[in-house]
Length: 279
Image (cartoon, rainbow, N blue to C red; front, side, top):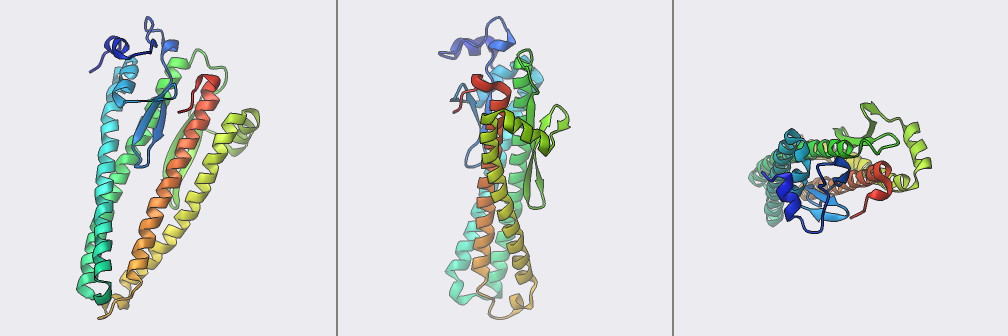
């Protein structure tokens, strides 16, 4: 465990710890990289999870939760990528045998694809739960060290899966903000509006891809359950359906991740104004 004192001594160029006076602590920005892993920034510079934990030692319980959850999120990503690798391997297997598809080849492909999909779903769930909890811990930490300086509501975000992808919610304390309230803040705080509009565009793209993914899933399941799969010459739809399903999964994740990152930027601009430095 890294103590606050040793951390402040070892961090070059930073003098945030002054007699444990909270306003001297920096606010932390959480972002997600391409793989969905949590990445942290302080004053526009990328920092390690160990550094963030050291700042969070003002609440030891939260610091421990943060470290454990960060590890869980990374582990989930590893499981997710392994599952996706299995799906890609199954796709390559089917492609190599595209000119001689038979029931056994399709069965092998189906088993591998299903196993990879289940593994990927488990990993994705671990990662999402981890990032969601880290998001809350950092929101609470930033509020704790700046609560005396706030002169307007302190907004937080949460995200949850739905039938067509994901929904991002904005809260003022325990209260979910209405669309009218968010629109009012967009009119009052231009920088908040700029990033929030970017987030909304990405959410709209995510929704469109979610609809496409759902449609491709129905076609995919219909194909698997159809009598065609039992014939001696399985349909050539096998490869296009697999590619479409994999593509919508990847692209949907990209837009959802971008939406979450843009929402975090919007809230940091709203909550901390000029103090917040962009990465």
